[in-house]
Length: 260
Image (cartoon, rainbow, N blue to C red; front, side, top):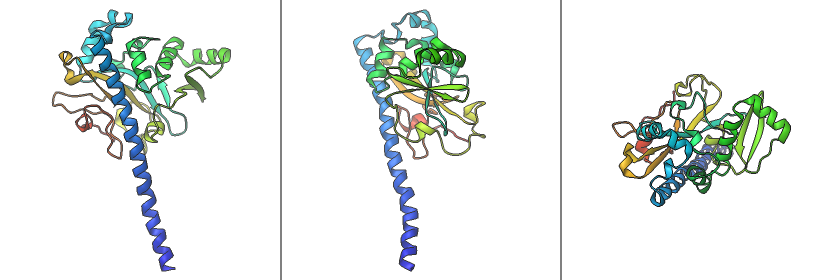
């Protein structure tokens, strides 16, 4: 009996540790994808220095784009929304997700941003962003779903009460945290704005060090109000409970991440 009790206690300790190690490995695999996106954009810059500003929308918003790429917040391209009771949701923009820095209209249906997302393993995300911008609100999505169904070539639409969630057919991430959100109660989570059920992150891009002369970019997943890099070099990108930092600046890019 004593042996059985000891084995039970050891199992109770070992299983959570093993699960934590597996989950951390998954988070590290997910982290690689923001490096793939950075590399895809930087390859485009090597081929064409104007690659980040070659769309009609970018050219007509060149001043704002230039300022944002140099700013602490960087440029937000799209929003990832996690909710424990539903599928992950990709949005073009949201008021509780760095919306003031959002330039999702840069992606369009082709070109540098679109190709870089697909190359980095975010197939379907660019299509979702365009779809979200075209349909504008849940009422229009409802009408579209009635006419054309929920399935698209690269993404799926699902109902969530009176709202709709859009997610790529090829999952973006494999870790639990980037599919169901952070652990614990969100009611005291200040960087989520008015939302107390959904956790949102923006995929954001900045000139390396905020310097346009670097001719390279860095990428991070930022919580609402998060910064790519402040004047002291530190950022507030998403940091998991397992210590995995979702910034291509490395751990300094998550030094000021706070979840309270």
